[in-house]
Image 1 (cartoon, each protein chain N blue to C red):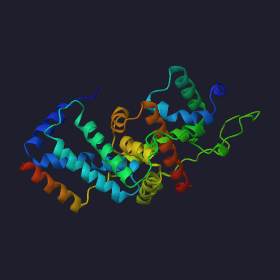
Image 2: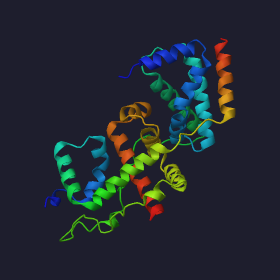
Image 3: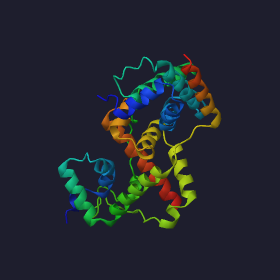
Image 4: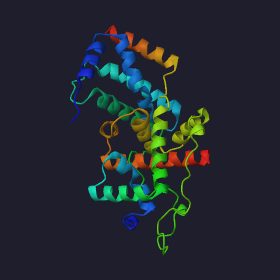
Length: 207
Length: 81
């Protein structure tokens, strides 16, 4: 069970003292992640921004009562999830029970067409159309970063949230599981699918 | 040749478990044996690693100045509680 870390204790004390710099720090620490998670539930970026704004106000309202039974981070993300669900109900958007969990239909990491047939006498399941090494110079180009951001935006909300929290924000798998309330296994499936799709998008662009 | 244990198509589905360190010992051994002999899967793994690195180099979304100002003003109100 996550509890309040020494860093969070210090931050919490500063916040309760009304330290504006501490509040700025807290906002910059989590704002982008909150936005990614909110987008799992609501349909537009603008609505996600509103939900995050509401979350920060609710955090302020609850700060004096926060008892530290979970980490500050977990608490903030649980407020966000509640707000986002309420918003989704209000806009009559049905949230499938499994919105956070991976789709049950299998999503192969690589198009099955790119492998030899499983019945192939010599090379069953081996690459028929193998990946080609990427050109280093193009890989680091600014345009590639744009394509990468587009590929992440195009992912389903749950996959986008997991890859953003893990690979962009640098969270641990445990932190992601706690913030989203999903199992380790489902977190890994979402991460796997997200990374595979982003790699495919890069491959298509760099070809 | 030990390639029979794991096909390329199977390997690509284990990449995340491998990188997360959650692959059971036996599968991990198959994975590494396959990788040592299969340049195509080696390229695939490198590309996944490169993808992770590139995503990590993107900058997080930042707050609009208006939104930040609204939050700071809410903080000041709260602080005068």
